[in-house]
Length: 157
Image: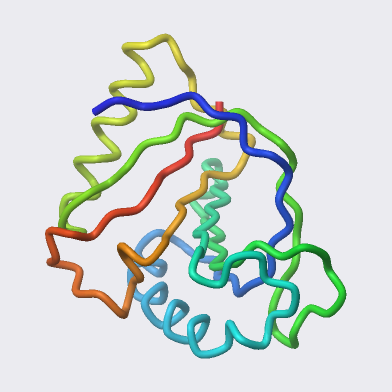
C-alpha cells in the first residue's frame, strides 16, 4: 500500500452526526447512512451530490467517537433541522485507497498506518480523519462483499 501526501483545502460540510463508543458506532452507522441518504436532498448548495464524506472525530482519552456523514457545500445558508454544519480548515493529509470487500478495511488501516510509520509520518490525532465516498461505494446501497467497493481515506498529519 502506498500513500500520497496531499493538502486538502478548507471545506464546508452539512450532514448528520452520531456520537458513542466504538461498539455503538458499529450498530448505528448503517442506520445513520440510511437516514442521511434519505435526507441529503434537503441540504442546499451541495457542490457534488455524489461525493459524500465520513468525518471521524475521536476522543482517545474517553474512547468516544463522533462520526459525521456529510456533503460539501458552497456556504451555510440553511442547515436543515437535525443536521450540523461545520468547516474543516486546510490541512495536510496522507491519502490512501481501500479497494475490495468491507471486511478487509481493518487490514487496509493496518497497512496504511505501517506505511505512515515506515515513511516517517506521524498521524495528528488532534484533527479529524476523513473518508471520501463516491459512486464506487455507497454504504447501505452497495453490498459490503463487492470486490469493486472503493473509497479514499485521509489521515491528518
